[in-house]
Image (tube, rainbow, N blue to C red; front, side, top):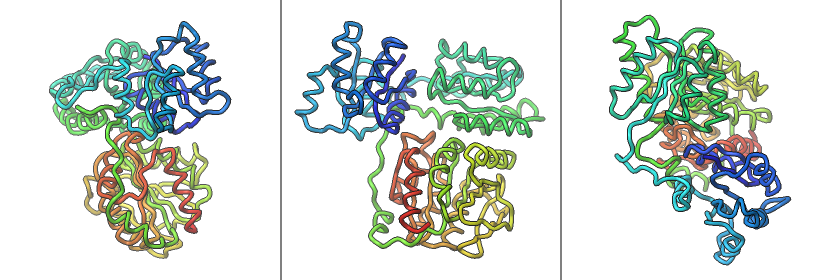
Length: 482
């Protein structure tokens, strides 16, 4: 199905397009009525249009009127999504020709409900109602395809809907197989995993993709590139093991990731942002300290999130920035290198004993905890091999605790997309010391595990779309002297 999203606000377009993509729509976007008419002339009639009211050049009401005058568009479902709340104004929009109205701000579940009411999509599945998660496997190794098919197929909540030998075959299978997720090898003949991923993103929107890559130097670099290109997650491909051991690793490492990315019994992007309660709300009544450092926790979906957030505040930052991204040692050096190169930022992998100067970004080394110690203005990195916390090493809680010891209420925590609850205990310590925590919202998160735990605990004083997180950090650093 195809949709046209018309709104002059890029964040609003992104939220709507994300929800539609999760409902299997191929989305086009336009920033005003004139752009929308041009897009329709070029690509023809979509299955639905969402349109904002107030836009420059040509507003939503005039666009709707023009469309309703054209016989080809008279029966086209049009949903207006706007800030108007007065019934008289909404009545005017209905008179112009809209089919339904959704007021901003809105949840993805509310948007889905409107599309169901319009007959554009089917009723979402309820808990226990939907069938197994459909997985399309793409790997050039017949052995790996066979083990994956047998192991995933043995789980009653999963169903292998196809197995492709390369990227071209995978792309050809998707329309008929209609998978809920693609498990994609990185290195393949004919069409490699990164090229395939980019085509999936272009043709099939937000279809979840997990990269299944070998832990080699070349494989690690390619996987990081894939994550930055939009892969949802990755799993290290086991090597040198017997078939039974490979199957066990798949059950341990792959199945949980698939189920976390395609949750059963929930409408896409459903849920609401929790109301702010608890200690973080109380902390705003006290004059905040000057920010002395920023600590960031991120996991599943992290590389593209970091690539979007860091450029928004790092160039003007005058404080150290430290990041825990859950990744093996093989990957973090490549991620730091790619972030530094793509964003033009001073990002590097942590080295034990090094100083972190204002404006520098240090990424925790995979497989080792990262702490900071020494002087508040120039902290020194300490790497340890202490036991994992939250089943993670590095763990964000370890970094957050050390930041509180050094900076106290001058700590600004940021918790982005990720699976699990790492960062929750550390955020609690930041707030107790008088610092503050920003978390990514559910709509824009690949997995709303880590940020969701912090938000539900009432520790976040801002729950924001990814596009706004970096801007908010920049504003706080400007206001509070960082």
